[in-house]
Length: 148
Image 1 (cartoon, rainbow, N blue to C red):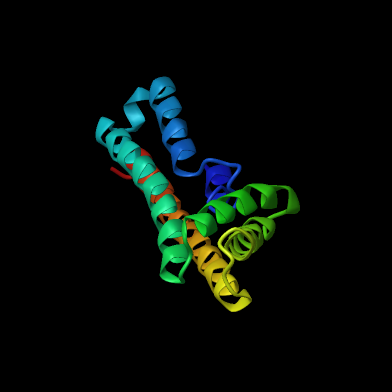
Image 2 (image 1 turned 90 degrees about the vertical axis):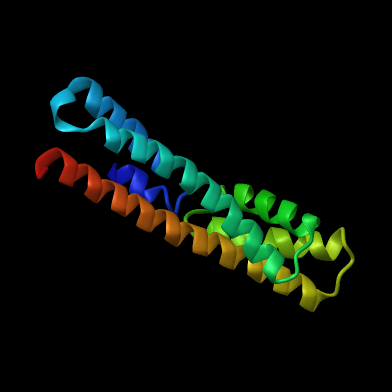
């Protein structure tokens, strides 16, 4: 579950779905310690985290003026950024969105940089939101197993 918590900032690691999977494995091996309602709630949270991630990234880019080219470039840049450490993903999203807007959409440098900033900001917002959701899921897991 702690590995999943790190996944909020490292996109190569599934965050909330990994916590859900860990809870399912825990339920299989120790059925008396976790309620079925927690598993249902974790499944809903995992789906919500994936939806929230996509929505924040797209909203951030759109809010700062990105077109479909910028959103596509931001996603491609984030994937390339995976190979450059933890700061590579948000920087890759920013650079990818800005370059896509500038090269393919023929927008000015200022507009392109603004769209790239929005893509990076959207990614950062989704990372913080997913981190908080994963932290809440872990706390809920321990409360359900050991307190209630």
